[in-house]
Length: 405
Image (cartoon, rainbow, N blue to C red; front, side):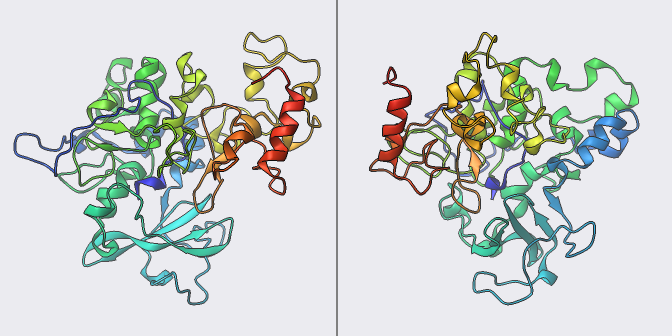
């Protein structure tokens, strides 16, 4: 369920996935779960008193729409799923729903079973417009929580879908990814505003700043079992003290990665980003995304669909290239076609949310059709040219770029 993920883009440095992790069977007397002081949290409404513009932008953002009460119709509708008729995949009704998770790719639903909030075992695909089973059998934590009726939403999901969660109180301070999720507890700052008593990711090192996003946008596991989020982590701290991200295994398909290390599912933005040249040259999430929200899709700082985002650093006259007079010279597609959108070749949709190939890969590499020959691994060409074979696409690419391997 931690795979629900917050929408903010992830990337990472210090929390670069590690091959080894200490495996402990839950908390122990000598190594308890880290805890936070929830009395130091004040809530986003208090932050709005001084930061109104950021607050108003955030209110409309995906960060503030991760968990909402069920509203079936009207201007504030939050439920997009069809509850009008029975479905074999859905053993619950709308009346049983306490919270709705997600709105863009899929919706999952939280209810109460024997006094515990749990995520129901069915999800609604927004694109396919149908109910799907949600078993979570491929998640690492499944053997510890096999029965959905006893899976605590707090232990598996709420750590990334709420603000200020504490393992000891089993409570959060605010629903959704609010101000203090990224800036840390704000009581001291509200009482005496100063740069020194609040975390501003823009003033952190690139390493620590990226980790603020990675804490929810990097698939992995904590240093102990039972929870599926970095218990005790707060912005500015070293994430690897709380969380170890997964990394690809060359030539092996896993729950998180295709054989070539690209995204096999959502919520691996950070895992794939740390493989990229962009990451190695010091770029971070905030170079492309505004965590307070924006008018562009995926909370981008500029439009990716018009190439404005990518052309900030790439293109003619830019040190990062490529160099061309007309973009069609580089893409071999019409300038206004989807084939000339940078993201469709360099960030193809390889990751599964509710349906395959729904979320974008973040290595920024062009994925050759060669990887799909004899494999299910998606590539940059056939995600658009689905009616063609990888062999066809590879021959075309060879003609376009004869000097490339």
